[in-house]
Image 1 (cartoon, one colour):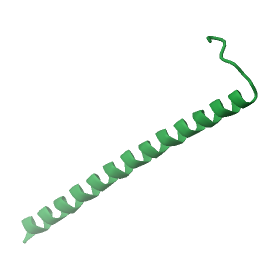
Image 2 (spheres, helix red, strand yellow; image 1 turned 90 degrees about the vertical axis):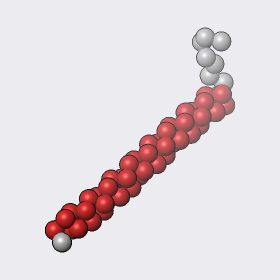
Image 3 (cartoon, helix red, strand yellow; image 1 turned 90 degrees about the horizontal axis):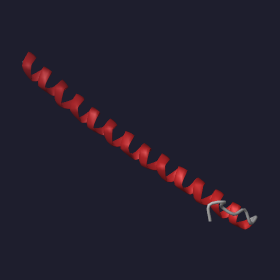
Length: 56
């Protein structure tokens, strides 16, 4: 009985940890996408006001 409870808790804990790992990956992907979108918007704005890159 005791070992069954331990195994049940272990399984539930493993599932929760797996879910948390997936949530973290999803959040990281969302943040990366948000940064990429922001940089694209800044680039579009700067092109719109004719700011040129000194390197080109």
